[in-house]
Amino acid sequence: MQQAGQTGMLLPNQESLLNPAIPDKGLITQNDKTALSYFAKAGYTMKNGKLVDKTGAPLTVSITTANGYSDWLRAVQAITKEWAKVGITVKTKQPQPAAYQLALRNGDFQLAMGSVGGTGSVYQDFANNLSSEFYTPIGKQAANNFGRYKSAKVDAILDRFKTTTNPQDQMELGYQLQQIYYDELPSIGLYYGGSWGLFSTQKFTGWPSAKDPYTSPKTYVSTSLLILTHLKKKEAAK
Image 1 (tube, rainbow, N blue to C red):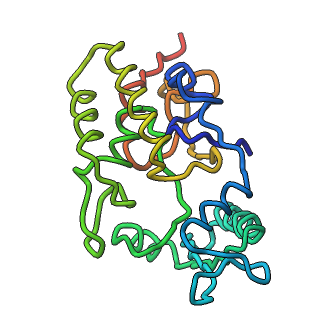
Image 2: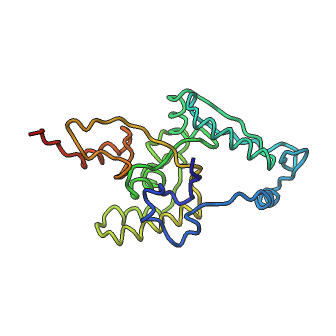
Image 3: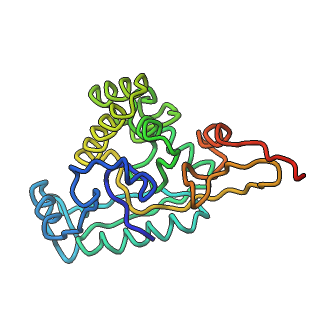
């Protein structure tokens, strides 16, 4: 499992589009001492191995993940162990998948383990996760941007990205979005997760593959449309 950077980009697939100004491809090294200094500034102190506030109440964070999604649950368990080292107590919520999706759409969570990106389009990945086009108040269902991120600057960049066909302009706008993502952390990249899909080359070619990973072979979100634009009918054998 490969550690993910905090740029919002899927590596190594999108490495040629990565902002070179962001250090170490967006990877961040864990630093417990620095983390604890920030908690101290926020009024938390360590007591009996737990971070507590001025009233003595322990710092507790809940992470919501879908029941039965064993890979995400293992990731939450790893986070629980790491955060315990700096005194944070983690409570795991595991609603059934349908209820999990509803919680995301309604904003009914503190933190949620899930997946973002992977459409094969830099614009689409950032728009789905950051655009205020999808913004709704907590309690009302959102189609995307479940973290309720909102930025006029990001919206302006996305608007320009959506209308330009100049590859160099698209590259520069992608750099700007990555820098904002790295600086503000609207979501936190942990690892590059797997995506699965089945296809047959019996009648059509052009499917995504290890040699041409233009998108994931999954059959949800916008990847299906992207795949359809790449397919070519296979010629009958002579």
